[in-house]
Image (cartoon, rainbow over all chains, first blue to last red; front, top):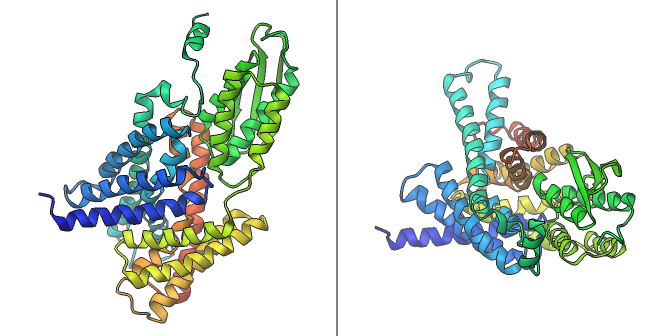
Length: 178
Length: 261
């Protein structure tokens, strides 16, 4: 059952993810009108992931896949309306879910393992930690991109034309037939 | 359509500029190829294109006469990510395709798009600091930890902007910024012992604004779409930046004598 506590936690998670997405998005100078969309998508995606991990007990990469899939679907819907390529707001809204901490912890773990002069830290657990962080980074990254790309692949033809202002469908069909 | 076909050199120059700007702005490889071939086809030319991390190579071929062809190469200048440019150039490419604009007209619109000023750097600075503080909250950091991360990001991102303006080597830039951010977070959270219950999280999230998210996403997209070479080079580039971040961070851990993160 969904309790109020959980609901509040999910909504708060979404709000903070939206703030994070806006900030990380403006580094890559998105179109003005895409920024609010980024915030909405990031809130939905990250909130969903929080719910899946904390309530349904999914692991982080599977949860990321579903979250990214929802972002991908919504981004196609928005792209059709404001005539931007879907990736212009789909990518920034993924940014709060990028496994940055896992990524640099992998490298930190490697450095620590290598520079340990006493040999006391060179344990199987250290290797397991490095592997776990590294694989999580890789799998979450692939899950995020696959999840976002899946709706775009499913509606392949349409998504390429999101930035097209007027669509002379008939003329195109005639041209393709020639 | 074919009576006023522009000279192949003109088309080739335009397409190369287009491809280079799109790559510099941070698009994945297949969109660049699609946009450019869309424009070429509106002038009755076909293209074959190779895109590397630092160069674009393109052969433009007359669709009816294969003897008319032109190959040229252009360097990709390292520029900052710019999604507005991607969006506008992509739209322009469709307008060319649908409306058959002339070369000078495309040129002038292209120049206008490329020269559009970016968002004010101070607004970006403030928003990035807020974003990283919010990110700290997502990792269950408390309010004081958020404040620490806000300050650390504000200063480190300012340094990053200054270094970018001076065209510093970007690996050096990442090491320095990661060192500054983690040093500020580490000093306030551990050494001066400001009352936060989550000093580890403050230190750990203070460098996360540097993570090259967009290049990582582009790398995976290229790999999935079969542009394995381009995807691999993007991936290695991004990984080197992450190593640089880890180096800066471990340097502050060493200086501050913090053992466990």
